[in-house]
Image (cartoon, rainbow, N blue to C red):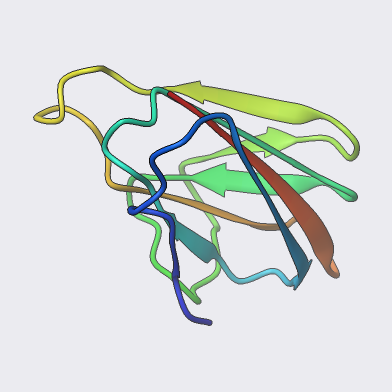
Length: 103
């Protein structure tokens, strides 16, 4: 699974839908000016940052988001402390993910 590079996004809010994401992580590379990421899906979703990698199963250190809800992650303004990516996948089966970037 190839990472989705959103680093060039400069206008907020920015909306993205990714269909048919399975149980292996989809990586989203985030823009520096993004101060909040909201992720939700049509099915139960796992969301991770530390220890996750694109295309690998997310088995530990993740947040859980029930179907048809959003999980919000606030990001610090300082780029020194900001994670560059976030990862998401289906709890089981597949999920259509909806991403909202805010700046």
